[in-house]
Amino acid sequence: MPEAQQLIYDWNTVEAPDRPSRPVAIHDETLRDGIQGPSVRDPDIDHKLHFLHLADELGVASIDLGLPGSGPRAMADVERLAAEIRDQRLHIKPLCAARTLEVDIRPVVEISQRVGIPIEVAAFIGSSPIRQYAEGWTIEEMVDNTRNAVRFARQNQLPVMYVTEDTTRAQPETLRRLFGTAIEEGAQRVAVCDTVGHSTPDGARAVVGYVRQMLDEMKPEVGLDWHGHSDRGFGLINAIVAAVAGADRIHGCALGLGERVGNTHLDLLLVNFRLLGWIDTDLSKLREMGEVIAEGTGMPIPANYPVLGRDAFRTATGVHAAAVIKAKRKGDNWLANRVYSGVPAEL
Image 1 (tube, rainbow, N blue to C red):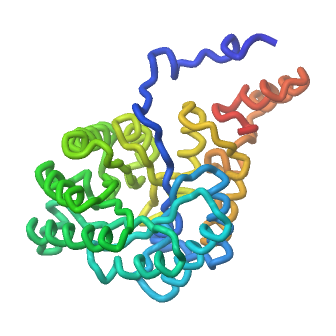
Image 2: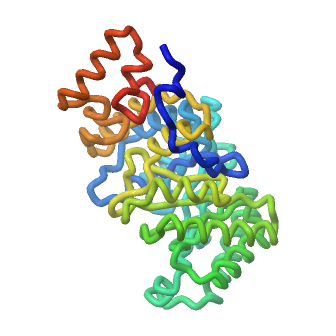
């Protein structure tokens, strides 16, 4: 059989592809942002535990366990999941979302103390002029909330990711003040968020590059997250662009679930990072992960969904089917899995 490069001319690599300048981790938001879709059912704890283990096996670095300040069930589920990470010694790191208010952060502190493991606080506040106007906030109020929230979490020995919602529509000087305040108070990470799915790839590159340069000036060791939505269909490509531009942790939700039309697809992040050579993770549990979330949330996987859909590696086109059959007759599964699929069927 000819060599692979003789059978597939890869235009993706004709020009040296851009690559991240630092290792990129993947963060999961399925159990928090993913269940904020109006048609999505909040999974029971058994489905959440199953998903937690699968995310860990798939090499996901961290996971948002929920927003415990939202009510008793959320608080109980977060504590059970955190205890599972502790008891099973999972590699995945826990995180909880909270508004930049002590009343939201205190439940995270209490759960962390009861379970006995650190839980990263994702303290979030809106940052765009349109959000400020709608809420009636002043920049001074936003800075004060930021300072008080990050300080409270750090005084209680919790790591902090400071999150500006709607970053992709915020003014540069506002971001500099908010991020600067959070870093002064000890935030170890900050997150750039395309909360309403406004960003194009050019916009994602610009805002992530701006914030990365700002962090390098202020405190280079501060990590940078990217959190995207898919309202314009740009969720996945924006995530890849953000990683190249300097984000070192990328957020996603299984099956692209989430508020409105959903978040960046976690499963497709894993597949594309693997195909790009950015990770070398065993993805054999990917289908199971998708099925667990589909069942738990009541959101079935569409037949044409990439990689996981029923039709992802099937065809009803006779000419294409014939090519696959001919490849199999050569006794070559490698060939059969690629002759009419840009994603290797064995992935």
